[in-house]
View 1 (spheres, rainbow, N blue to C red):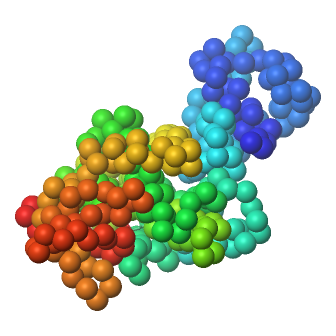
View 2: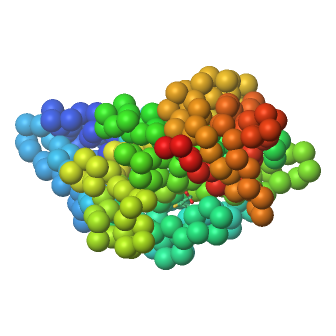
Amino acid sequence: MTMTIDARILKALRAAGSNGMPGTEISRQLGVSRAAIWARIEELRTAGYKIIASPHHGYQLISGPEGLVADDLISRLENPRVIGREIRVFRETRSTNEIMEKLAVDNLAEGIVVFAESQTAGRGRLGRRWISPPGKGLWFSILLRPPLRPQEMTRLTIASVTSIARALRNYLGLKPEIKWPNDLLLRGRKVAGILTELNTEPDRIKYAILGIGLNVNLEARDLPDDLHSFATSLLLELGRPLDRAELAVQLLREIDRDYERICTGQFDTVAREWSQQCRTLGNYVSATVGPNQVRGWAESLDTDGALIIRNDHGHLQRIIGGDVFIENA
Ligand code: BTN
C-alpha cells in the first residue's frame, strides 16, 4: 500500500488519540524531518483537520474535515489485502463507474477505489438513474480482477452486498434485508444498490467494476417524489447523520474480507451468510428477464450466484439477471 506522508501522520495521530504525539516522535517514526512534519500538519489544518498542539502532549487530532479525503481513508484502513490499497476522491463526476472504466484500461492493479462526493449521471441497474447529491452518500467504484469466469460474476455482487449488510449490522446495529441479487433494504425500502460492470474474454473476466451506492445522510427532500416509497437512507432510518468516512472504512474492510473468500474458493460461506438475510428466498416471486416473465417459488442460490426458481409447472429455472418481485409479501 502506498501511503503518503499525510496518511502516515494521520494514522500516527489517530493511534495516539487523546495522548497526542510530539513532533519529534512523529518525525522519528516516519523518518521525515520535523520541519517537514510541521509543514504537512499546517497543510492538513488548511484542508480542514483540527489538530491542536500543546507543549505537554504534542499534536492531537481532534476532528477531520466534512468531506471524504483519500489520505484520511487510507490512514484508517489497516493493511487492506486488496480493496483500498489505493483510493481517489472526486468532488463531482458523472459516474464513478465511468471514471473507473478509464482507469481500468491502463492495467491498473485491482483494489483501487474511486469515491465521488456527487455524481451528475449516477447509473443504476437496467439503465436506471442513481440519485447522488453532494456530500450525502457513499458513491464509489472498486476495480477488481477476479479469478472468475464471466458466468460467475453474480458471486461478486452477492459477496459485496453481504459485506455491506454485515457492516450495517455490526457497525450500526441495523437489520438490513437483501433482495436478490444486490439490493439492500431497510424496512422494505432500498438503501443501497450495486452495479457490476464487466469487461470479459470468452472464459475469464478481464476486469470488473463494482459500483456501490449507499444512501447515508440523504433527507426526504433529497429524494425525488417518485422514489419516496421505494428508497430510504441511513439518516432517515436512524434519525441521525453518520460519519461517512468511518462508514466507508467499515464497508471497504468487509468487502476486502468477502472478496478474499470468493477468490479462495469459499463462496459457500458467503452464500450461507447471504441466504440468512435474503428476503427473496422462500417467497413466491416473479422475475423479469429481458422480455420474459418467470413466476414461481424462489428456492435457493446456485453455486454461481444465480437464483433458482421453481416455476408453476414444478421445473427449476435459473435467473442470472433482471428484476425479481416478491408477490406474496
Ligand atoms: C442499482 O441498484 O440499480 C445499482 C446502483 C449503483 C449506484 C452506484 S453509485 C457509485 C457507482 N457509480 C454509478 O454510476 N453507479 C454506481
